[in-house]
Length: 168
Image 1 (spheres, rainbow, N blue to C red):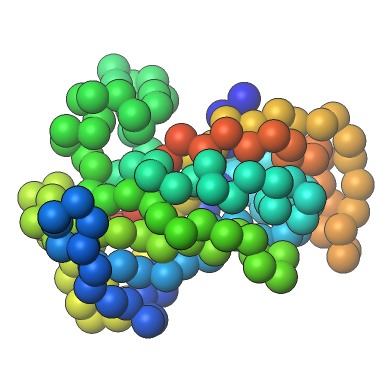
Image 2 (cartoon, rainbow, N blue to C red; image 1 turned 90 degrees about the vertical axis):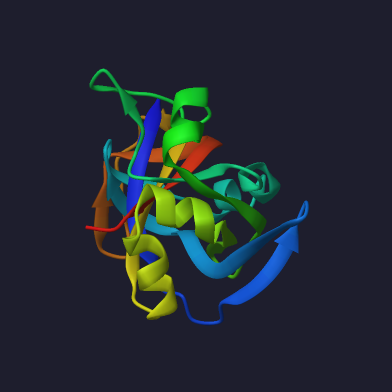
């Protein structure tokens, strides 16, 4: 099962770094938190034991502008066509801390400006941007309540595919 979940990217604490001979703008972000989140599969509970299970699996996943589709169907961002046309960077240094899955967006400025100039404009102006995780996961068919928020299932066994930047 594939799930999309939207949150925010706020480029406070940005830096410039190098990887494999290329310069990147590095933006810290929180990509998931413990709690109930309503994504493409409805309200699901994301428990800490699942968030903390394999944070390194998010590293080197592509960052793309919008969720990828081909011929109107959702596809993996690892498809060569998507990587060529929509990729602007990768995720790195993902870790779990205090109920939050934190990561860094390593954005290639030249690629970002070719794909969508609004990406680097938002980063340079320190503007918040929505982002959304593209993740394959299993849904445990369990309804419940977490701190007053109802959920229809529990997200399990994350298999990250991409991070989508949503400049609109």
